[in-house]
Structures are given as structure tokens and as C-alpha cells.
Length: 288
Figure 1 (cartoon, rainbow, N blue to C red):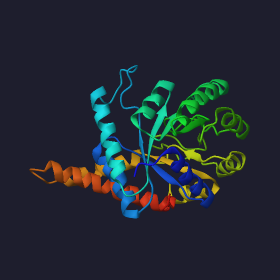
Figure 2 (figure 1 turned 45 degrees about the vertical axis):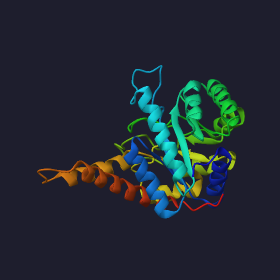
Figure 3 (figure 1 turned 180 degrees about the vertical axis):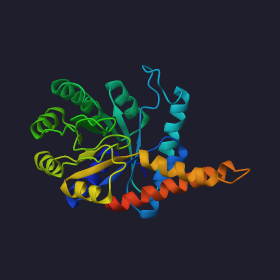
Figure 4 (figure 1 turned 30 degrees about the vertical axis):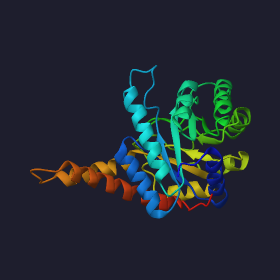
């Protein structure tokens, strides 16, 4: 079932209290969407389907046409409504107010305003503006303080506790993405996770903490991060790799590989990989 913002808040509060996390897995087509939801349904746990702003009229780098974006959004919502488990639809890394509004209008119950590259004052102001619009529609808002890098090799910059407190208090966001040693995409070097900083942030901020750049971490790193306070974990890159490798294996040695067989192999591998991480994260069934 497609839940609302209040119900999502209940799930996140339960996860924070009981020290487990929910994985936010990216859906980029119907096969990846099915992999996420089927994994959650087989385990009987909540699903968090994460997307991006599929069509931005102010950008030349859209991955969908406007019509294609609207069609895919409707397909996602229909499938979420039919699922027997609670489904959260989250719009990830949206840098503008207009982008967040598009997500709200599309029917998503959670949006992320990412103004982390701006000054603290600008970040607070833009985030607060999104919060005002979203809360009026029963939609939660994730913000970010302490920019999470796009690739490894940069000096690690950890989110400051005082800065995070000021940001959360001033903006009113419902979830806070923090920089604690992870990066988006692939790791060129071993990530330096700061578990002590996670614990300090959890103590200082009374809302769920979000880890971006979850792909590539070990089971122990995930568990220690969750024990210290991480509640939502964004995970995309390695799910795609798992599915891609299965497709490669499915076509090797085949003179006439069948499209449906190849796609199914990738979808099943992605589903199994997601299930494994849902179990690592300790994601639990929640009655609403």
C-alpha cells in the first residue's frame, strides 16, 4: 500500500527507536521497481522506493521525456498501491523548490531538498520553504547538511554537530542526511566512517539520520552505523551491478538470448541483492 507522510514518520520513528534501518533503493525502470517491491514483499517489510526528478523543464539532461516521466510516475504509484507492504516513495537529491513541488504533485510521500552546497543560511531558508509546502500536503522532507561527495578521493568532511542542530531547528526537516565518511558511487579507497560522529548527531538531533552512498560498505560497517544512529540508507550502484552481472552471465554462450529471459535474470539478481541488504539493515515489519 502507498502510505502517507504520517505513516512514513511512524515507520522511521520505530526504526530509530529499535535501532534498525530502511534501505532506500533506486527505481529507474519497471524492472528495478519490481525488484525492490518483490524483495520487500517476500520479507514482509516496508519498502522505500527512491527516484529522481525524471523530467525537469529547466534542465537539458533529462532521462525521460515529459510524457514518459508522467507515465512512469503513474506506473510506480499503481504498483505501490497494489503492494501488500507499506511503500514509501521518495524523491532524492532535488536542488530546487520547483523540483520538490513536482514530486509532491506526482504523489510522492517524501522529498529531498539538497541545498547542502549552499551556505547554512541559504540551506535553512530553502529547506524551510520546501517544508512549508510539503507538510501542507502530508509529505515529509529530507534535507542535507555537510555535503556528501560524488566520488572517492576527496578529503573526508564530517557534518558538524552544532551546524546540524542549527539546520534542523531552523528548517524543520523530518530527516537529515549527514556526511559521516561515505561517498556516492564507487569507492576508490577504503571509506573512513566516523561512528562517534553518527552517535553524537543522533544524540543532538531528534529526527532520523540518513546515510547516502551505501553501496560498497561491509556488513559490519552497516551494522555499526545503524547501531550508532543511521535510520535510512541510500543504496543504488551495487544493485545495478548485481543485475548487470546476471544479465552478462545470461547471454554468455547463447547464440539467441531471449529478451524476457535476460531481463528476468537481471531483475531476480537485483531482488536477491536487495533482500540481502534489507536483512543486513534489520528492516522489520511494521503495523500501521
